[in-house]
Image (tube, rainbow, N blue to C red; front, side, top):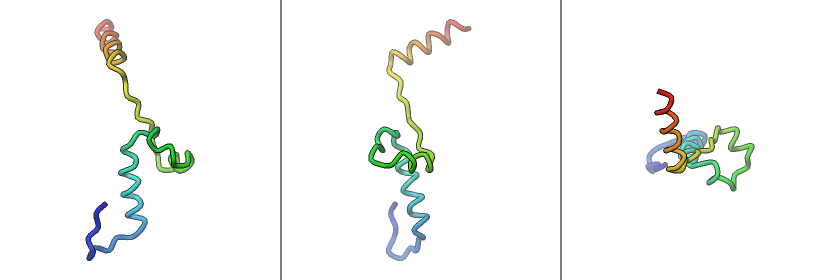
Length: 65
C-alpha cells in the first residue's frame, strides 16, 4: 500500500489494493464491515480445519482406495 510522494495513483486503484489486502483475512475477522460490502467484494469465509478433521478426512481417503 506504499505510495511514493512522486507517484500518482488514482483513488479507486488504492481502494482496490486495500480490498485485496483485506480479503486475505477470514470473513469473521472483518465483522465491523457491512455484510453487503463484503459480499460485493467477494469476501470468503476461510474455514480452518482442526487436526482431528484433517486426520478423519485423510483416513476416509485412504479407505476409499
